Image (cartoon, rainbow, N blue to C red):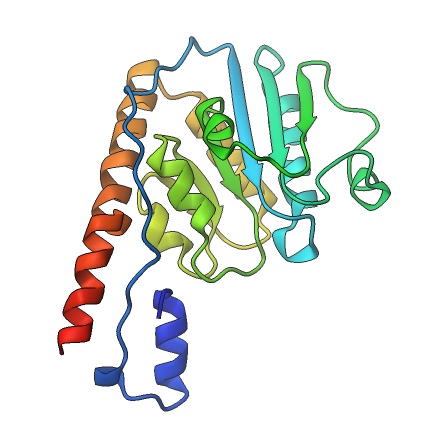
Length: 220
């Protein structure tokens, strides 16, 4: 299984635990300089995922709007990428408020062909899904040194750990609270969190480690 939660669910259904192995998806961890944060007057938040009810883009957008209202002196930018995540998509446009705070800008890009550039330009990644298995976007974000706020679904808590936070599914108040918390961290604290995110995710999903785990599994 590439998902801890999936393995547990199958064991609950009667699969023999000693016959089940959890091996997460492997990722190449890019070689990067340590991420640098600017002074606490701006925040760039990103999210990646197709436009679908399970991803709950509406929750993400409304959380960012509320955070921006709470922090009028912060220049906020929300970057969204994924199939259908575009104002040219009428169904997506319907969930985007007409009146947003003056300090908030939206940048919806639809399908992104350069995810490395996307992760490199954001300060914080959020995932507001109602359901997940093993969301690779969290691993990708952390591999670029981007701390994450995610709903606690699937393996999100296992992936994110304390780099930065998981919140109950659908809980906008908690998401806004965690956005406030991250914004108010010092520059040093944010940069330390960024370095920790890279280190933690490398220990969990580095492709070399995962190859070794598959080889050991095949030998048994």
